[in-house]
Amino acid sequence: MTVEHVLVVVALLAGLAGGYQLARSRRRGRRSERPQAIHQILLPFAGPAISRRAVDAALRLARAEEATLMPAYLATVPKQLPLECSIPAEAARAMPILEAIEQRATGQGVEVDSRIERGRSYRHALARLLDHERFDRVVVPATADPGAGFSGDDLVWLLQKAPAEVLILRPGPEDRAFVGGNREPA
Amino acid sequence: MAAAAGAADDGGVRTARRGQLKVFIGMAAGVGKTFRMLQEGHAEQAGGRDVAIGYVEPHRRPETSAQAEGLEAIPRRRLAYRETDLEEMNLPALLARAPQLALIDELAHTNAPGAEHAKRYEDVRAVLAAGIDVFSTVNVQHLESLNDQVAELTGTRVRETIPDAVLGEADEVVLIDLTPQALIERLRAGKVYPGENVEAALGNFFTVENLLALREVALRQVAQEVEAKRLTIEEALGTRQERVAAAAPQAVGERVLALVRPQPSSQRLVRRAWRSAQRLGTGLDLLWVKPPNQTIAGEVERQATALRHLASVLGATFLVEESDSLVDGAAGVVRERGITYVMVGESLPRRGLARLREPLPQRLMRAMPPGVDVRIVARRGDNGGAR
Image (cartoon, rainbow over the protein chains, first blue to last red):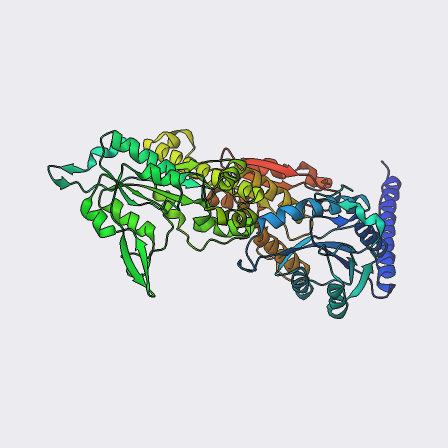
């Protein structure tokens, strides 16, 4: 190999490294130009399943915004137990749903950071989550099924309390398709 | 138990040996613990032993009352409490009577004020200390360590509890098992509670779901007791030491460890590890081996807090070990805590010179005591796992 060959190889490598750095800085620049970038989207849910429509809506948003989706299972702890006690039965209910959401998210290239939050009621669990997690948007499915998920009062409360944009999904007939849990599989 | 019978009087002087304790444990009231205890009391009496009932609570169950016939009962005593006379076991009378074997029901019972001890298991300890063998009964939800778990499973908290050590002191633990359906049938037939209480019981505590969960807890508890006793006996005989290398911990059953890092992908690893631990009926430890110079702030702090929180929800233990080497840090914890099963996340594809390095699972296997399994949890296209 001659000196010229070596110089050509070095020049090529330098060119590649420079091009990579340039592309990276341009990408970073585009990201910083975007006003109020959304980094984290919270998807709180309660009960044995979550509607597929709600998950898909949250995933679409997360993908469009390059945000991380934070599905959060809200667990209620009976009053006779300490609030910070372990809740294996609730955790066992949450696991397959979180797994299913993660699977769908991975398929769409969305990062997921799941949570299980405890409270005396769904609203209390959500309030605790709002206290110690940061996020930029909340996607919450309203339900026509009384006793399952968030009531109208809960949604009003969320609009008042959440330090983020709140997106409430109108109940729809497609809500009968669920992700995870014991209901109809997605 | 019968083999220990000769320990009583020897020329009128009671030897100083401790009595033997046999506990009949069940998932709930009505499975037949008291009935079985009385049956075995009869069998011991028929075998020539001096048997007396210290206290039996028949709960107005005719079958149980009938089974108690033919056995001498030490008269109960009455203790006045808030203008009410409460019937309790007469401990002084039982000790004075000094049978070879005493049948004492409801180990977790709380005595009325004025008794020698606050709890019946303390009475039982006094009886055992006097060299009298004891048969007793308890329900699984009365064990302190299981009280929270059972309350969460069933929605009902039991206030009378006993320390787990009391069951550990038992020389024999016998599980009185019944299928939930059979217990519900007994309940409907009025064999557990009087007729007027049956519907309330069926609607509250005695549901198939509750009983299935309790039965599982009871079976696991007794399996653990049996395992612990087997290992203790083998250790005393010296066989276990021969079989296990000196470096291996004195493990009782399985214990699972998940190697985590403060990042979202570790949550999946934790979920997998928790499910494995549940299937094995064992505890779970989460270990983050933190480089000594790494500061816990910002996103690392947030993710570490999330892992700690998840551990608390699952009843797992979150450990942070400072070490420059993930393998050395993990191996130390594995030895210290008697871990038998280690779960790690899948490593990212290695590039460049890193390809020459031995993969993490192999390094872990070499550093850990023999017999520890290592399982790799696959990534789901994220940047997961310990490397």
